[in-house]
Image (cartoon, rainbow, N blue to C red; front, side, top):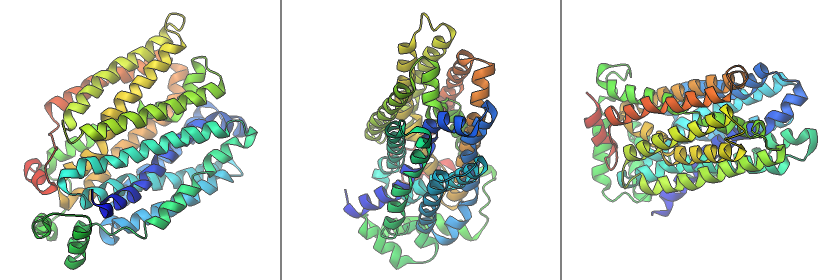
Length: 438
């Protein structure tokens, strides 16, 4: 692989590492901040979900600045925001201060969850795009693993443990910010701004084999830019449907309940605090291993086969978790741990690895920013409600009913994949536009 392309991909995907870290770090802090700030089920849900509401805002507002000023500058701003958020949370003097900086970090998550895969999709050759955009998900899961691991390392630091858990993210945020000055701008954005020589230079640097043909393809796909660029048009109906249904049902699989509340779930299943933190590290490890496997297969067997395999596996895994809550004497702690780990494995192998690739592919070039923002908005809005309501749902409905609910929702997702979702493997963004636009 071209070294310049690899470097640009890895650096830009560091934004997704921070996305993953910030997503998972809250799971280790819940016990400590509950005691420190005297939180109830409701206020704990607010604390966990406040970053997600910031994420919704970040996903919505980033599209236009990304089109005006470029993908690279937006990722630079994300790095700075992550850094400020990490330090702010670490030194928070009160609950409202913590909420404010968690919300700020959420804005960075939302913005980078749109910009990082978009940047990589626009700089990568079609033959490698699936694997390279999947680096986004790889970095997310590495970030999750590192967050679980640092949570485990800091668990015995006393009542200040949660401050260390939040604050350590400032280090990778600073590294990301510095390295983003080195990577090139998206060639598609450069063409859009009539900077053809710079675009040609970038394409050459990242190893594009047929530069003139690629430039002509990009120019052709941008011709309609001077006309209407409204997303909500009938001809984009299939893209909009896929961009909404996929993230909505993916979040309702229950994956982020595991990521946000894993130690709490394991403690309720009978584990000690330290053991629960270590089991969460196991989740991070499984997540990483199966994401790497998915990266190998995503451009070989396609997006849809991975999703079918994942939906079936996640269905039975969530049933196993539900059975533990229904009868913990018969289905003991081991069943719960195995069920959660297998669920994470199937999710990482399928929905987790496919979603960001698919959202970066499904929308035509002229509405890609708006389309990805829509998909990400749906993803994080659903996520925010799930994160907010889970502690209350666990108390009032019981774990068995909650996890069975997640299991049942894999059925409509499977139908969506088999009946609606198009396969995007091996097609250029311009070829996909001709297939998807009605």
